[in-house]
Image 1 (cartoon, rainbow, N blue to C red):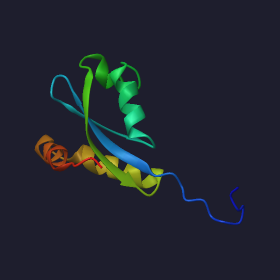
Image 2: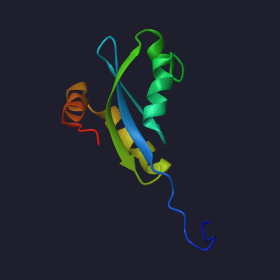
Image 3: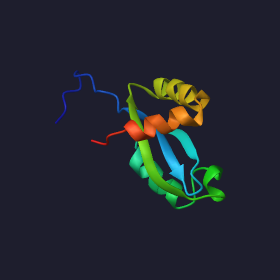
Length: 94
């Protein structure tokens, strides 16, 4: 049983990139990027994937909080596609 006086570590949030069938990259945040990717593959979760299905989870980055994940998402969305492609190429899943 957990000791109620012990601080509970918050569940990490992640920023992630998903490749669509047309080659484009979608950036989002989630506290479970693998589950979120499955939702995207099913055609739900983002209108982005209505025109071109999600084919691969190509990048994830752990963040300390939801706010930090949102800030990182904004930064990644401002990057050129070539820089996003560099993130995807350099990504080594655990």
